[in-house]
Image (cartoon, rainbow, N blue to C red; front, top):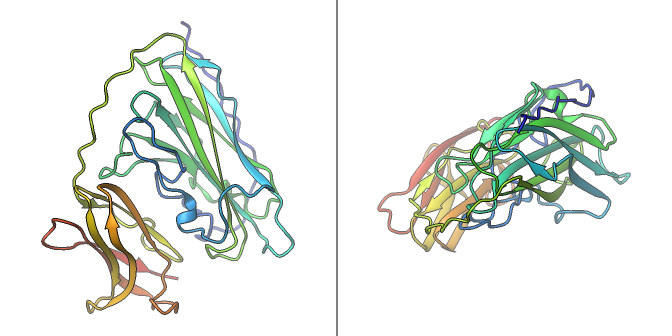
Length: 308
Protein backbone atom coordinates (compact mmCIF):
# COMPACT_ATOMS: atom_id res chain seq x y z
CA UNK A 1 0.00 0.00 0.00
CA UNK A 2 1.32 3.43 -0.86
CA UNK A 3 2.64 5.27 2.17
CA UNK A 4 0.36 8.12 3.11
CA UNK A 5 2.01 11.27 4.43
CA UNK A 6 -0.14 14.11 5.67
CA UNK A 7 1.57 17.47 6.10
CA UNK A 8 1.64 19.21 9.46
CA UNK A 9 -0.34 22.42 9.77
CA UNK A 10 0.15 24.26 13.03
CA UNK A 11 -2.15 26.97 14.28
CA UNK A 12 -0.07 30.15 14.36
CA UNK A 13 -0.72 31.79 17.69
CA UNK A 14 2.10 33.79 19.26
CA UNK A 15 2.90 34.33 22.93
CA UNK A 16 4.90 36.84 24.85
CA UNK A 17 6.70 35.67 27.98
CA UNK A 18 8.49 32.46 28.80
CA UNK A 19 7.88 31.83 32.49
CA UNK A 20 7.19 28.38 33.86
CA UNK A 21 3.50 28.40 34.72
CA UNK A 22 0.37 26.26 34.76
CA UNK A 23 -0.14 24.48 32.41
CA UNK A 24 3.59 23.58 32.58
CA UNK A 25 5.15 25.78 29.91
CA UNK A 26 7.79 23.06 29.56
CA UNK A 27 5.16 20.34 29.12
CA UNK A 28 3.54 17.96 31.64
CA UNK A 29 5.16 14.82 33.05
CA UNK A 30 4.69 11.70 30.94
CA UNK A 31 1.78 9.30 31.53
CA UNK A 32 -0.81 11.84 32.71
CA UNK A 33 -3.47 11.34 30.02
CA UNK A 34 -5.91 9.52 32.30
CA UNK A 35 -5.78 6.46 30.00
CA UNK A 36 -7.67 3.51 31.54
CA UNK A 37 -6.14 0.07 32.01
CA UNK A 38 -5.46 -1.61 28.67
CA UNK A 39 -4.58 -5.33 28.73
CA UNK A 40 -2.20 -5.69 31.72
CA UNK A 41 -0.94 -2.12 31.60
CA UNK A 42 -2.52 -0.17 34.48
CA UNK A 43 -4.39 3.11 34.20
CA UNK A 44 -2.36 6.30 33.93
CA UNK A 45 -2.58 9.25 36.25
CA UNK A 46 -4.20 12.53 35.28
CA UNK A 47 -3.21 16.19 35.52
CA UNK A 48 -5.67 16.58 38.43
CA UNK A 49 -2.89 15.14 40.58
CA UNK A 50 -1.51 18.70 40.75
CA UNK A 51 -4.42 20.74 39.38
CA UNK A 52 -6.70 19.96 42.28
CA UNK A 53 -9.46 22.59 42.22
CA UNK A 54 -12.04 20.84 40.03
CA UNK A 55 -12.96 17.33 38.89
CA UNK A 56 -12.14 16.59 35.23
CA UNK A 57 -14.37 17.39 32.26
CA UNK A 58 -16.18 20.58 33.21
CA UNK A 59 -19.32 20.81 30.99
CA UNK A 60 -18.22 24.27 29.79
CA UNK A 61 -15.28 22.85 27.86
CA UNK A 62 -13.84 19.84 26.06
CA UNK A 63 -10.75 18.34 24.50
CA UNK A 64 -11.05 16.50 21.16
CA UNK A 65 -8.73 14.43 19.00
CA UNK A 66 -9.36 15.35 15.38
CA UNK A 67 -8.50 13.67 12.05
CA UNK A 68 -8.00 10.16 13.46
CA UNK A 69 -8.11 7.89 10.37
CA UNK A 70 -10.84 5.26 10.18
CA UNK A 71 -8.09 2.78 9.36
CA UNK A 72 -4.34 3.07 9.02
CA UNK A 73 -1.56 1.45 7.03
CA UNK A 74 1.30 0.07 9.15
CA UNK A 75 4.28 2.42 8.94
CA UNK A 76 2.31 5.32 7.43
CA UNK A 77 2.09 8.81 8.95
CA UNK A 78 -1.09 10.74 9.72
CA UNK A 79 -1.61 14.28 10.94
CA UNK A 80 -3.67 14.58 14.10
CA UNK A 81 -5.02 17.66 15.81
CA UNK A 82 -5.91 18.20 19.45
CA UNK A 83 -8.49 20.92 20.06
CA UNK A 84 -9.09 22.30 23.55
CA UNK A 85 -11.97 24.64 24.36
CA UNK A 86 -13.22 26.15 27.61
CA UNK A 87 -15.29 29.21 28.47
CA UNK A 88 -13.49 30.78 31.40
CA UNK A 89 -15.75 32.34 34.04
CA UNK A 90 -15.28 36.05 34.85
CA UNK A 91 -13.35 35.29 38.05
CA UNK A 92 -10.56 33.48 36.18
CA UNK A 93 -7.35 35.43 35.87
CA UNK A 94 -6.11 36.34 32.39
CA UNK A 95 -3.72 35.63 30.64
CA UNK A 96 -4.92 32.07 30.22
CA UNK A 97 -2.62 29.17 29.34
CA UNK A 98 -3.43 25.94 27.53
CA UNK A 99 -1.73 22.55 27.45
CA UNK A 100 -2.23 18.96 26.32
CA UNK A 101 -0.74 15.46 26.27
CA UNK A 102 -1.61 12.58 23.91
CA UNK A 103 -0.47 8.98 23.58
CA UNK A 104 -1.21 6.06 21.23
CA UNK A 105 -1.67 2.56 22.69
CA UNK A 106 -1.97 -0.93 21.20
CA UNK A 107 -5.30 -2.47 22.18
CA UNK A 108 -3.88 -6.00 22.35
CA UNK A 109 -1.05 -5.30 24.79
CA UNK A 110 -1.40 -1.80 26.23
CA UNK A 111 2.07 -0.91 25.00
CA UNK A 112 2.88 2.16 22.92
CA UNK A 113 1.70 2.19 19.31
CA UNK A 114 4.03 3.99 16.94
CA UNK A 115 5.80 7.31 17.43
CA UNK A 116 5.21 11.03 16.88
CA UNK A 117 6.80 13.71 14.77
CA UNK A 118 6.14 17.18 16.14
CA UNK A 119 6.94 20.76 15.12
CA UNK A 120 9.44 22.78 17.22
CA UNK A 121 6.63 24.30 19.29
CA UNK A 122 5.77 20.85 20.72
CA UNK A 123 7.79 18.09 22.34
CA UNK A 124 7.82 14.31 22.77
CA UNK A 125 8.30 12.44 26.03
CA UNK A 126 8.63 8.74 26.71
CA UNK A 127 7.16 7.03 29.74
CA UNK A 128 9.51 6.66 32.69
CA UNK A 129 11.75 3.61 32.41
CA UNK A 130 10.65 2.37 35.86
CA UNK A 131 6.94 2.36 35.07
CA UNK A 132 4.57 0.11 33.14
CA UNK A 133 4.16 2.94 30.59
CA UNK A 134 7.81 2.97 29.51
CA UNK A 135 6.99 1.87 25.93
CA UNK A 136 4.53 4.72 25.35
CA UNK A 137 5.41 8.00 23.66
CA UNK A 138 3.62 11.26 24.40
CA UNK A 139 3.09 14.31 22.20
CA UNK A 140 2.59 17.45 24.28
CA UNK A 141 3.00 21.20 24.46
CA UNK A 142 6.28 22.62 25.73
CA UNK A 143 8.67 22.74 22.78
CA UNK A 144 8.63 26.53 23.04
CA UNK A 145 6.55 29.16 24.78
CA UNK A 146 4.14 29.61 21.89
CA UNK A 147 2.62 26.19 22.59
CA UNK A 148 0.66 27.39 25.65
CA UNK A 149 -1.18 30.10 23.67
CA UNK A 150 -0.92 32.60 26.50
CA UNK A 151 -3.81 35.05 26.58
CA UNK A 152 -5.87 33.30 23.90
CA UNK A 153 -9.55 32.84 24.75
CA UNK A 154 -9.76 29.52 22.89
CA UNK A 155 -10.45 27.15 21.39
CA UNK A 156 -6.82 26.34 20.61
CA UNK A 157 -5.30 23.56 18.51
CA UNK A 158 -2.05 21.64 18.29
CA UNK A 159 -1.08 19.62 15.20
CA UNK A 160 1.51 16.85 14.75
CA UNK A 161 2.11 13.54 12.96
CA UNK A 162 1.41 10.09 14.35
CA UNK A 163 3.67 7.46 12.76
CA UNK A 164 1.78 4.15 12.80
CA UNK A 165 3.69 1.11 14.02
CA UNK A 166 5.27 -1.13 11.42
CA UNK A 167 4.37 -4.81 11.45
CA UNK A 168 1.18 -4.27 13.41
CA UNK A 169 -2.32 -3.67 12.09
CA UNK A 170 -4.52 -4.16 15.15
CA UNK A 171 -6.64 -1.61 16.98
CA UNK A 172 -4.93 1.49 18.35
CA UNK A 173 -6.35 3.73 21.06
CA UNK A 174 -5.54 7.43 21.41
CA UNK A 175 -5.85 9.02 24.84
CA UNK A 176 -5.48 12.74 25.47
CA UNK A 177 -5.75 15.21 28.33
CA UNK A 178 -6.04 18.99 28.08
CA UNK A 179 -5.48 21.73 30.64
CA UNK A 180 -7.34 25.05 30.42
CA UNK A 181 -5.34 27.01 32.98
CA UNK A 182 -6.12 30.41 34.38
CA UNK A 183 -3.24 32.85 34.66
CA UNK A 184 -2.65 33.01 38.41
CA UNK A 185 0.59 30.94 38.20
CA UNK A 186 -0.67 28.34 40.69
CA UNK A 187 -2.18 24.85 40.26
CA UNK A 188 -5.50 26.21 41.54
CA UNK A 189 -8.46 27.14 39.36
CA UNK A 190 -7.42 25.10 36.30
CA UNK A 191 -9.74 22.73 34.40
CA UNK A 192 -8.63 19.32 33.12
CA UNK A 193 -10.33 17.49 30.26
CA UNK A 194 -9.94 13.97 28.85
CA UNK A 195 -10.92 12.18 25.66
CA UNK A 196 -10.13 9.11 23.56
CA UNK A 197 -10.47 7.76 20.02
CA UNK A 198 -9.34 4.69 18.09
CA UNK A 199 -8.37 3.36 14.69
CA UNK A 200 -7.83 -0.09 13.20
CA UNK A 201 -5.29 -1.26 10.66
CA UNK A 202 -6.21 -2.54 7.23
CA UNK A 203 -5.17 -6.12 8.03
CA UNK A 204 -5.81 -8.51 10.89
CA UNK A 205 -3.75 -9.46 13.90
CA UNK A 206 -3.87 -12.21 16.48
CA UNK A 207 -4.40 -11.11 20.06
CA UNK A 208 -1.43 -12.41 22.07
CA UNK A 209 -1.57 -13.82 25.57
CA UNK A 210 -0.10 -11.07 27.75
CA UNK A 211 1.84 -12.39 30.76
CA UNK A 212 1.42 -10.69 34.13
CA UNK A 213 3.67 -7.70 34.67
CA UNK A 214 6.69 -8.15 36.92
CA UNK A 215 7.32 -4.95 38.87
CA UNK A 216 10.46 -3.85 40.64
CA UNK A 217 10.60 -1.29 43.40
CA UNK A 218 11.98 1.95 42.00
CA UNK A 219 11.50 5.70 42.11
CA UNK A 220 11.76 8.10 39.19
CA UNK A 221 13.30 11.56 39.32
CA UNK A 222 10.91 14.39 40.27
CA UNK A 223 9.41 16.20 37.29
CA UNK A 224 9.78 19.15 36.91
CA UNK A 225 13.05 19.74 38.72
CA UNK A 226 13.75 22.49 39.70
CA UNK A 227 10.13 23.07 40.68
CA UNK A 228 8.24 26.32 41.13
CA UNK A 229 4.77 25.22 42.27
CA UNK A 230 4.44 21.44 42.01
CA UNK A 231 6.55 18.41 41.19
CA UNK A 232 5.47 14.85 40.34
CA UNK A 233 7.18 11.63 41.42
CA UNK A 234 6.45 8.25 39.81
CA UNK A 235 7.36 5.05 41.63
CA UNK A 236 6.65 1.33 41.40
CA UNK A 237 6.33 -1.33 44.08
CA UNK A 238 7.44 -4.92 43.63
CA UNK A 239 4.86 -6.05 46.16
CA UNK A 240 1.90 -4.67 48.05
CA UNK A 241 2.30 -3.24 51.51
CA UNK A 242 2.64 -0.10 53.59
CA UNK A 243 4.31 2.87 51.88
CA UNK A 244 5.52 6.19 53.20
CA UNK A 245 6.43 9.03 50.84
CA UNK A 246 7.76 12.16 52.52
CA UNK A 247 9.65 15.38 51.86
CA UNK A 248 12.74 16.11 53.97
CA UNK A 249 14.91 19.20 54.22
CA UNK A 250 18.69 19.28 53.95
CA UNK A 251 18.99 18.57 57.70
CA UNK A 252 16.93 15.39 57.36
CA UNK A 253 13.79 16.78 58.98
CA UNK A 254 10.44 15.67 57.59
CA UNK A 255 8.47 18.70 56.44
CA UNK A 256 5.64 17.02 54.54
CA UNK A 257 4.05 13.58 54.22
CA UNK A 258 2.82 12.96 50.67
CA UNK A 259 1.49 9.42 51.03
CA UNK A 260 1.23 6.96 53.90
CA UNK A 261 -0.69 3.69 53.99
CA UNK A 262 -1.29 0.48 52.09
CA UNK A 263 -0.57 0.41 48.35
CA UNK A 264 -0.98 -2.36 45.78
CA UNK A 265 1.99 -3.67 43.83
CA UNK A 266 2.62 -1.69 40.67
CA UNK A 267 2.77 2.00 39.81
CA UNK A 268 2.20 4.84 42.23
CA UNK A 269 2.30 8.62 41.95
CA UNK A 270 2.93 11.37 44.46
CA UNK A 271 3.21 15.10 44.11
CA UNK A 272 4.51 17.95 46.23
CA UNK A 273 3.16 21.48 45.94
CA UNK A 274 6.07 23.13 47.73
CA UNK A 275 4.25 23.50 51.04
CA UNK A 276 4.95 22.26 54.53
CA UNK A 277 2.58 20.15 56.60
CA UNK A 278 0.96 23.28 58.04
CA UNK A 279 0.26 24.71 54.56
CA UNK A 280 2.99 27.37 54.59
CA UNK A 281 5.48 27.65 51.74
CA UNK A 282 8.79 25.88 52.22
CA UNK A 283 11.83 28.07 51.68
CA UNK A 284 13.66 27.88 48.37
CA UNK A 285 16.40 25.27 48.44
CA UNK A 286 17.23 21.58 48.11
CA UNK A 287 14.88 18.91 49.46
CA UNK A 288 14.69 15.13 49.35
CA UNK A 289 11.64 13.03 48.51
CA UNK A 290 11.95 9.62 50.13
CA UNK A 291 9.96 6.45 49.56
CA UNK A 292 9.84 3.76 52.22
CA UNK A 293 8.55 0.69 50.37
CA UNK A 294 7.52 -2.79 51.55
CA UNK A 295 10.43 -5.22 51.61
CA UNK A 296 13.05 -2.49 51.19
CA UNK A 297 15.53 -2.14 54.07
CA UNK A 298 16.30 1.50 53.21
CA UNK A 299 14.22 4.31 51.75
CA UNK A 300 14.64 5.33 48.13
CA UNK A 301 15.39 9.03 47.72
CA UNK A 302 15.41 11.71 45.05
CA UNK A 303 16.64 15.30 45.29
CA UNK A 304 14.46 18.20 44.18
CA UNK A 305 15.16 21.93 44.14
CA UNK A 306 12.41 24.39 45.03
CA UNK A 307 12.97 27.69 43.22
CA UNK A 308 9.89 29.90 43.19
